[in-house]
Length: 379
Image (tube, rainbow, N blue to C red; front, side):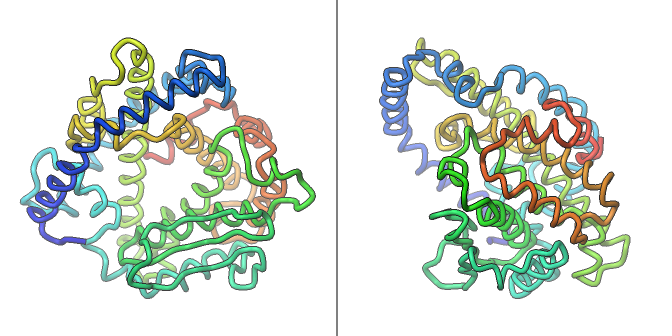
């Protein structure tokens, strides 16, 4: 990761310039795919089609989350100004380019604390405190080595859950290594913990991706606990709280970005039949929401298929609800308790059968109750 602000800026500009040259081809693929989806599903409206598939109201979700984002704006603005200054330095622009977000996510100036060498053992011990011994888990195939040609992006490949689930990571240095490991471990434990007698559909296929993202988010959320930072990195309570606040800031930035992204994508597909796909509103919405500058020509590279943005956002809401439930039922140190592990295992065994909304009802929440999420974001 480049340490110099200007160098990151220049590299980001070059990468974005090159990416934009593929936009015509991206649009061709989108248009062809939309034509096929419309014909096969017999639902012409792409938004209606996805709502039918996910069995949710995308506009209802957008409305609830825009209200949540607005309610958190004052706190987010304070965090942004503080952490932009601390992480990007005085040479930063008032509205830095989006090419700096990866540097922010790693808390790169604090890399000497969150070293890549300690990522695997610390994450393994973190999971062990929940009762999950990944080294002895026969269903999870670990690939944690640092090889020159290996992608640094952590991922899970559920080849045949629960018997064969691959967890792949490659530490690069910085807190994001730890968060990525914990996030993917949540996915892996979910797939590897499902009932093997379930039909394949309920072991590996779900209505949407919101369900399994709940479990990746709740395990990753451990990295936002001040006590976790104090326990593993020898920090004072004050420093641990400050570093945990940085993770809350990044969570708030990503949440607000995805809310703006969902709003743009709903508008994009709402007018797609008329204009064939334009970037209207993309840069303005994401820049206003995050305080990070997005380029108008990045709209297609930033678009995931099937409104995955809605899945992430639903999981954000549900994970915060689950955390509130665990704090209530297990206690403030839910993140280091085997009782948390037992409760998660009970959820994992159902595989992908339940919907995200059903999980909300079981733990005592309405699907769009964003109170716990607002609390997590500091509002």
